[in-house]
Every structure is written in C-alpha cells, then in structure tokens.
Image 1: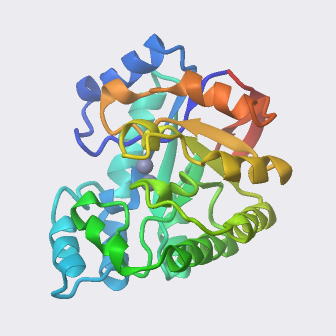
Image 2: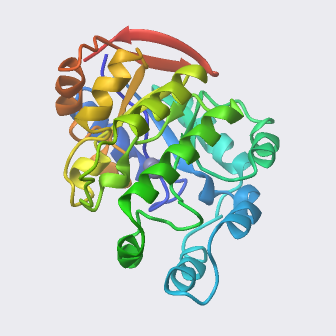
Length: 282
Ligand SMILES: [Zn+2]
Ligand SMILES: [Zn+2]
C-alpha cells in the first residue's frame, strides 16, 4: 500500500474545494491513504509554548522569529481542525495527525493533546536552543555554531521528545543536513543515540521526501547512514511528502519506497486512533 502521512493545509484554508487538490494528486500517484499533520503552530492552543521556547530578542534570529510567529500562525483551533477532518473522513481515505514541535515543556503538550482523538502524532525537532534552524532567512546562524554542537543538540532534542512518551513518529530525522552543512567527523555515536531513544519509546521514523524537493540537500530524510542504523534497530517507518501545496501530495513516493527497500524494509505503518498496523510497502 502506498501511504503519505505527513502534509499540511496551512497555505490554504479549511475549504473542501482547495483540499480536493491533495486527493487528486494522491489519486494520480496511486496513494491509497493520506494523513494530514498540521503544524502545532496552526493552533492557538500552542501559542504560549512558542513564546516560551523561541529566541525572540533583538538579535538577528530573534527579530526574524518575532515576525515569523505573526505570519499565518495560530489560525484554527484544534476543534476547528477536527470538525473539518471529520467532514473529509466521511468521503475520503484520510487520517488526522499532527506535527508537534519539540517544546521544552512536554507536560503542557500532553495537556493540550489529551482531549483529541488523533490517528497518530509526529514529533519533530524544528528548534535548537530556540533557533528555527530550517529557516533559510536566518541560515547565517549556522555559521555561528560548530556542527559537533548542532548534532549534539539535535540528539538531545530527540531524546527529550522520545522520553515524553507522547509521539508515534519522529518527523524527518536528521533534516539538519538540509542546507548541506555536512559533518566531517564521525556521527555514528549520534545516530546510535537517536535510534536507541526511538527504539525505547517505540517510535517510528518518517521517511520524508520534503527535503528531496524543498531544500538544497535534495535527498530523502533520513539520509542513508541513519537509515542503516534505523534498519539495524528495526525502527518502523511511515512514508511522506511533507506537501505544503496540493500538487505535492505523494511527491517522490515511489522513490521513497525504492529507497527504503534498499535498506531491507518491506512494510510501513498504518495508523488509526493511535493503533498501528504493519502493511506491505508500495
Ligand atoms: Zn517538520
Ligand atoms: Zn511538516
């Protein structure tokens, strides 16, 4: 079965005509089921957490992030989202997920999520020490840190997400490669740390083609070195496009399926109400 479990409606609206494009693209690419994973910054319930965690001072990063938080964020409540998804579920093979940023206060996240019947929950590292490292506008910040430091921070953030026990999947593992700042040191201990944390938390990995077509690195995340470690630990997978536009739904899915087969994978996960099932790939 072909599945795409990571995409966003945030550049459109909760309008059935607009989201029809996602279903059309899925059908064209033979995707049998899709899952929507709105960012936590879609929902006002999470707003205070961003203001707690992000660098928002007068620095170059802080000034950008202050503006970022005011642009197209916090525009639908979780109730609005579920009401819209219920309408879609009545007509389509679709699941309700969410992509939650790596907040420092996971107890608050637990409180926000607990009233909602998600099919699955993705936790993604989007911030390192309050810095949105994947934003091209503040890419210069990469030059102010060593890659050793960045890789260590990344592993630490994954460990925190995993330790919370709140998440089914780690979003786009090791997308810290996205701007092609590539380590010249041995990252094996970091890869092992991340895989062990995920294994212990019974988390799957998101094999995400977003970094293949949306970022300079132009490769599927996670990259081969981590895929090998993930396979060794038998971490289950989901496949996804991280589509932000309807036409990108299912983008590079076939390539992702071929890619994971190369590491010995034959199955992927399908979720319903936080229950998982292994289904054949492709
Ligand atoms: Zn993400
Ligand atoms: Zn995403």
